[in-house]
Length: 187
Image (cartoon, rainbow, N blue to C red; front, side, top):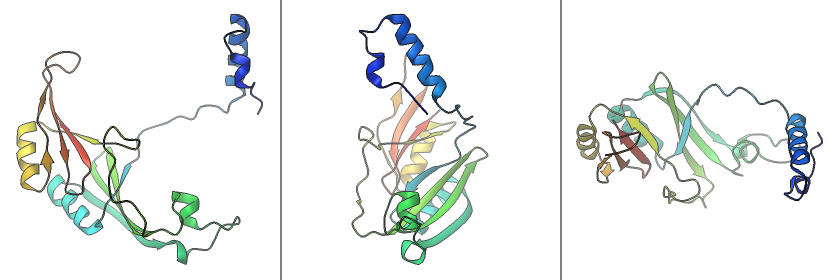
């Protein structure tokens, strides 16, 4: 599909031409698909069985299914000579096992343990780092949730009491699970 080069939309062009060129570029693009919902999130964990036990026994998630171990060395190369893991998850030579968990009717998450490659990083990004993230969990009592989670190996920061704005009267707190993932507990 043809799209005009970016310099065609520069500010020096008359306003009506910029609008026409922008509309043309958008009409040449494929149609926007309908995004229905979030299917799942995925977290890499250092010990899959321990993580599954934590999220099952402490958080209350249900194990839906388990896949693997899947090893790139056991899967035929694609027609371009790449291994399956490189082609599909962007990690050449990987070996992984995953478990899909269900927390509520509309919240699935996947826990993945990579055994290869050996040079994988062990540190997690902070919320401010590229790739930083957290999972927000809604509860009916933030203080009770924090007491429960800290008794089960989580580390909580201080509770934030929101006094103004669209969330006035709400409370939230960031928590690290035993594997270093950020949870935000909100009411």
